[in-house]
Image (cartoon, rainbow, N blue to C red; front, side):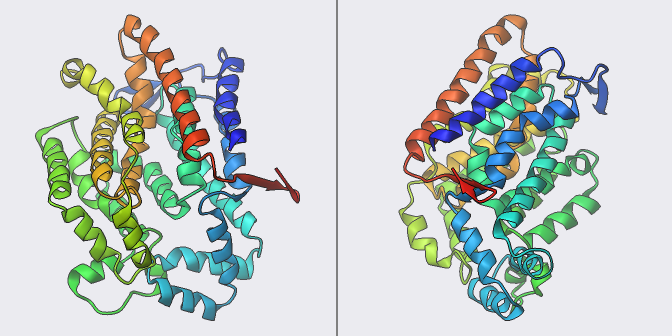
Length: 394
C-alpha cells in the first residue's frame, strides 16, 4: 500500500503547478445566487487522473478479486440465473456484467476500467460545477480514502452514489418526478416487494444495483430547503433513537435475509463498528459548521450549501450510529450524504474570516494527510494493492 502515498502528493503537486492558472476567468452562476470561478476542465481532469489510474487498473485489493471472479463466472445466461438465485438481489448489476461479457469484452479489467471511468466522470463534473475550490475537494476526496474505500471496494454502491450525486440539480429544483424514480430503479423493487408482502422477485432488470439506496427516499424530503431546520434535527434524533433501540440492526437482519449478505450476518454481529477516527475525520465539516453556527444560520445561504450542510449532518449521524452497530452495513449508508462534504468544506474555508482561514486551511490539509497515512499504512497496511497495465504488474 505504500504506493498509495503518491495520490495526495500528486494532488498537492498539481495544485502548486496550476496555482495561478486553475480557474476559468469569469465567475459562473451555478444556482440561485451562487457564483463561483469554476476550475478549468483540463485542471480538474489532470488533478484526478492518478486516482482514476489507481482505481481503473487495479487487479488486487479488497473486493477486487471477488468482482473479477464474479465477472468471469457469469459466462452464460444459465450461470447468471444460478448466480441470481443464489444471491437474490442486485441482479441488474450482474445482468449488466453478463451482457458486457457476452457482447463487448470478456476482460474483467476492462469492465472495472469502465466502471472507474463512469464514477470519475460523474464526480469530476459534479464537483467542478459546485466546488469553490476544486483542488481542495480533490484533496479531501483522496485523503478521506474514498478512492480505496469506494472506487476500489464496494463499487456497486459507489456507482449508485455517483449517479445520485450527479442528479443534485433535480434535488435543488424539487424535481421529485425525475429523482425519485431513478432512486427506486437503482434500489430495485425487491425491498418494496418485501414491504408489501409480495411473493417472489421482480424481473432481473428491476432488481437494482444496490438496495441501500432506499435510504435516500426519506432523506430527500427532509434535507431540501434551509439548513438545520427543526425537521432536520428531528431526522437526526430519529436515526439515533433507532440505533439506541437496536431497530437499525433489526432492519438490517430482515433486509439481508435470503440475500447475498445473509451468510455474513454472524460476521456483522461480531463487527466492532466504524472506526471512531474515521467518524471524526468525516465530521470535520459538521464541526466547522457548529463553530460558525450563528453566522451560518443567520445568513442567506445558496441552496446547494444548505443542502450540503444538511447532508453532512445526516452523514455524521449515520457514522456515529455505525460505531455502535455495524461498520459493514450501517457504515456504508453515509456515502450517499458524505460526498456533499466535497462541496461544503471549500465553501466553509473560503467564507471564514481571513484570520481563521489562514489557520484552519493548512491545519486541515495536514490533518487529512495524517489520516490518509494512518488509514493506508496502518489500517490497510497488510492489504496487497496491485496495478496491472499492458500485462505488467506493480
